[in-house]
Amino acid sequence: MESHLTPQEVLDIMIARDRFTAWLGLNIDEVGEGYCRLHYQVKEDMLNGFERIHGGVLFSASDSAFAFACNSHGLITVALDVSITFTRPAVAGDKLFVEAREVHLGNKTGLYDIRTTNEKGELVCLFKGTAYRTSVKVTPGPINR
Image (tube, rainbow, N blue to C red; front, side):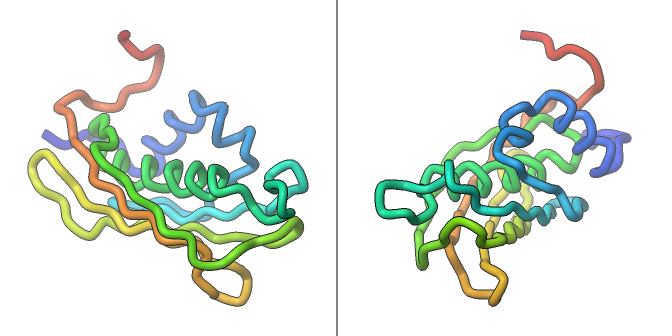
C-alpha cells in the first residue's frame, strides 16, 4: 500500500531527521518517484592522503541519493545490497552531481542506478543499490524504535 505523501513531502520528513546529509553539505536539486538528484562541493576535509576525494564520501553521497529515491514512494525502504565502482578522482573545489534512478520496482524490492559526475559530465563513480520496501509508511514525527 503506497503512502499518500508526495516524494517532496517524504524528502522533507527525511531531511528533517537526517543530520548526516546536512553534515556532508549535500544539496537536493530534485526528487520524484524513484528519483533524486543532488550536488555538493568537494571540501578539503573530504580528501584522502593523496588529496583526492575519499571513497567513503562518494559512497555516502550516493547512499543518500539512493535513500531519497527509494523512499520516495512513501514506504520505509532500506538497503539490502549496494556496490560502488570508482572511475575517476575528484579534488577540492570540484562540484559533483549525484543522480539516483529507479531501474526496477517490485512488490518488495527495487533496483537503483546512482551515478556521480563532475562538472564536465565525466563519471566519477557508479553505485548500484538493491532496496527492500517495508509495509511501514513514512510519517512525520518520531520514529517508533
